[in-house]
Image (tube, rainbow, N blue to C red; front, side, top):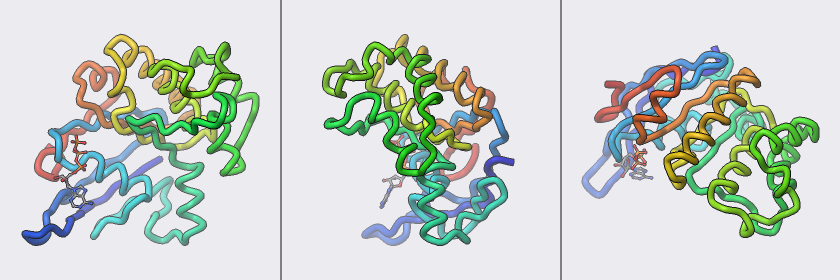
Length: 218
Ligand SMILES: Nc1ncnc2c1ncn2[C@@H]1O[C@H](COP(=O)(O)OP(=O)(O)OP(=O)(O)O)[C@@H](O)[C@H]1O
């Protein structure tokens, strides 16, 4: 199993006392599987993604990446998880303005020592970015920038791809094209994808759906 999440609980402290955002979440993700995470605004989707990516820690419960409990990792193990094993795509593109498209795509893979120029070239080609490799982010359209962000995430060949509304900034047709590409590439690398989306249309293209309601799987 690529990813196993067991009975996750998470509360935030507020002025009125603790607020339970996640109240016992279980999920699994297998190789090649794509899981849509839906739920109303505030239902805890981003919180769950952050916990799975090791960006925050749950109050209780377990998160296993390929059988390894992330709570048991030391700082170096956690850093390596964030840089290579898990890839995250956010709604904001977060490209580095001073780097060309080529260098933006390579950036994370280089950091984690997983840079493969041939794979980076394949990604750029499939994402339709080859004519734009020498350009800088400000010279690209929103859809092109998002494709660079996705290529950058996939460049280190992560085992699990976590995506938070990755096409939320794009028009519907562009969003569908970008998602199809992401689904193809995730399938080819044998990764699993967990994607937050508000779009019924996009959720329907994925292999499974998990709906959060009041901190639980509905
Ligand atoms: N650091 C924090 N401190 C306190 N409360 C928080 C914190 N982060 C999130 N929350 C609260 O937890 C709840 C869940 O937030 P989260 O961002 O996970 O929801 P979401 O389902 O991703 O929402 P959206 O679809 O609007 O992005 C919200 O009520 C939010 O206000």
